[in-house]
Length: 623
Image (cartoon, rainbow, N blue to C red; front, side, top):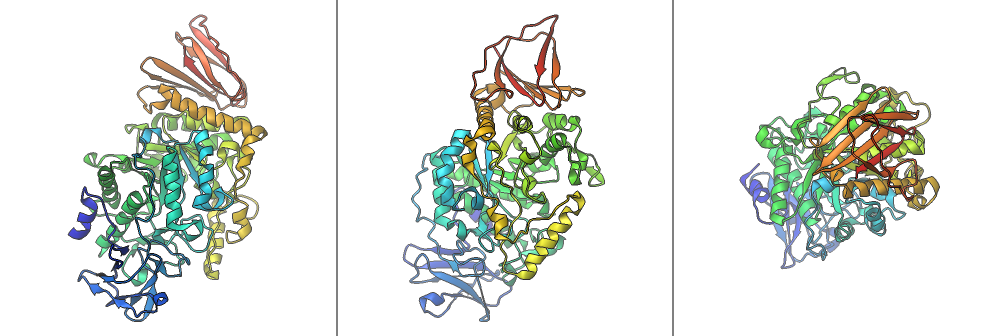
């Protein structure tokens, strides 16, 4: 990376974006683009009725220049070698979609109300993942705001948005984005995203943004014309691998690190969730993940805020969250899919695909004790040894869940867990996640057993691409041997069927489950042993034959005992040794709003026997 680029991301002063279109105080706009594949570049603004304005070569593949008499909202494209026009690779907004012109956007137009906001500690994160397009009837950033109070009432502390970078059409999961700096036009664009983040901060909610740095979508991907952003040395399942370590990779690294800092600085994002880092290939001496994370942390310090970097990875590689001084990349946290797989396989009996490595009760116990289940052990699914141990890392560095967009939406029909489990089992799954010492993540609607499925959906214009997506889905599910038809990802009804109906959370079993989630989250916050994410103060007793997990967590003399029965039978659990007097704080067999009696469980012959109903959860607190 050139010294100029390193300085722009390594300084402790406030960072400013040096790519794309930047409005200046005198009414002009500065343009800068990396385009070594072009001999000359000009800015074309046909809507202003003016001739294209040439940019000057900086001699390093970059072109830059100032265009006078421009205003926010001006549309433009770059003209390459007087022959082809292309949108800006660092476009701040694509009002007409991926194939349309880019738009000049003033970064300081929005008046923020979060001056006192500095973020929240990572240990306090209770995450709620949502898709902007289906979370509200409007399917927009603004449509989420009226539901923020609902999330606060539930107890959520961090809102996680699936990717919002401009993608083709109006409906997409977001992982086909092609303009990394441009918030999706159909979601409301830049100002609406800022308004949403601001509204979250006013309510004390952190905002996590899912960003995709392992590939760009195929439709509307015009970066090839500008520069070697991609490489054929590596391959991903989703598209061309990004060139992070080959010739001319320094400006590529600068582009994506700048993008991370852009979301943090201009949009006040509190954490970045890096999608599928196992698709990020870098064999240089200083990995892009380490460099990006250090840049984000440096910028956070300059801004006086807490900002976290969280990875999604199926590598089970502890180096991702190990500090650089100890040979790691230094990310703040990563998703632990093993926890989900162990929980789902145990409760549903599913053994298809990657679930073949999970299922026994002992896998869930190991996930509770250590984090990764596959920690160097043999993977039947992969037919090799897989992973490393993360038992020495703080549990606050692992994100766990019972459901997420992948584990729901990547099922053939997008079925949620509630289609496979009883209400008692859904409560047990929720408690397993929320009573764990890890960072919990909820997927939108799971808190009340939303019946709408969440299948994969797109809205591409290219008929060949649409057919390729359909065929790809069919190949993907061949290993799972599931009967039935795959919902057409291109059909609008597939998308519309995924929209939520949160009013259900007030009705019947939906209300019961919602109250249970709310109670669990409140206990996690209020009871110090549960709020403290520490393995050293956690004792696990495994009742293997009974399939009961007993977890005792302590802090400064306070103790909490959590009992989780994964058996379909009533189990009498014998707690060994002298026990304190316990008071029930939560019993999943009663309504969450019902009065829980103050009772004492007294010792008899140095043994305490607690009777647990099938799939029951009991949380007791030391008197």
